[in-house]
Length: 210
Image 1 (cartoon, one colour):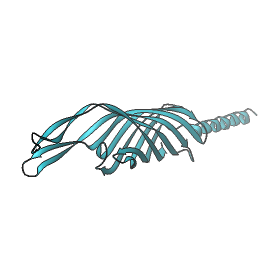
Image 2 (tube, rainbow, N blue to C red):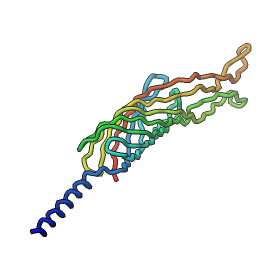
Image 3 (cartoon, helix red, strand yellow):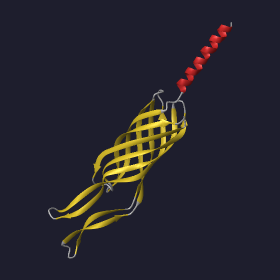
Image 4 (cartoon, rainbow, N blue to C red):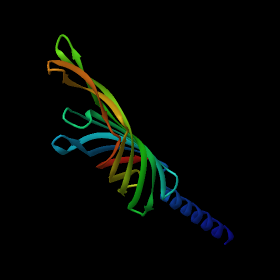
């Protein structure tokens, strides 16, 4: 009789341990993302689309640290900041995780970089003038909400939506102007004041938990 009880307790312990391991949250997530970002050009707002990846470390069921990187390949030539866009952010995600889905808020500082963000015009004896492009990088913060779905223990589907805040500092570029009687072309400094922009950004991703 004692042996039967002992065997029963052992089987119960094994079953409880197995159930606990099944419900245990995986610590790491690696995901592929498709993203869209509002971008300002001289015609107003346009949509910019790109791709990227995300790495997440789950501290517990409600709080995680994560970083994401995105690349928007289109080279805009009529935007406030020209060229393609690279974005890297990292921060915290916190909320409530249920059995099959989760709802979270996120705050992720980082940077946004424009491959031809600065345009300078200079006088050129051979071609009258020439344009020089240089990369421009700004501090940014991604704040918003996240909805996750868990079709299995190892797969997570995710939708993000929020505000990408870009802090653009004051900068000096160079333009062209005619002086004197209007026959002499010279390069003149142009000061662009500092400003902060708010742009809607969304992303859709599928990730693997391990």
